[in-house]
Length: 188
Image (cartoon, rainbow, N blue to C red; front, side, top):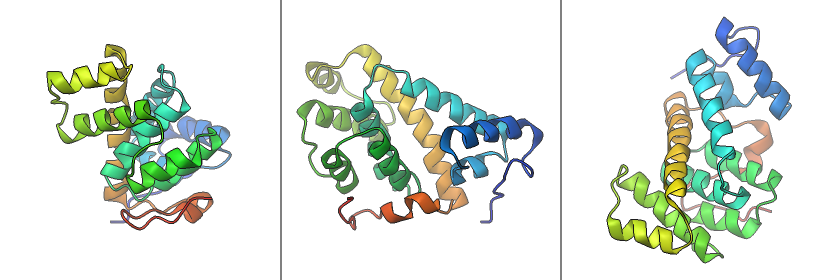
């Protein structure tokens, strides 16, 4: 599909400061950001959604559960390895990461409830039953958490869909963390 992949010099004017910010934040330009840079509004929107999602009440484990649940369900070849690396940087347990990548039960019941609810929101396109909401609340989550899951869905839908259409190549730093549904080596 040959989507453009920009650096700071080749990017449209509106994307240049956004790519500068990515470079400073990551010490490199993530391939996803290079592709998004074709549309300054898309790159800015994604960066804003990411920032806002990380400022929710979710802790590192919960952020990872929402992100990876969506990434795995969408079979995003780029985001699953990228968020595996991010989870390591955030000091999320490898047991949680492996369970998410392999679609097996999470070691903490509350996190499993979050994954289940996120999947229900995603698969139901936001249509969840009252019983499903009550089950989520009984696990210790609030109305705010419902809204924050939706924020995570918005962010990850952007990145997952863009990676699908652009076939974004994996960044070298996450190539060892490659992922294919049903074929996941243990992440060390």
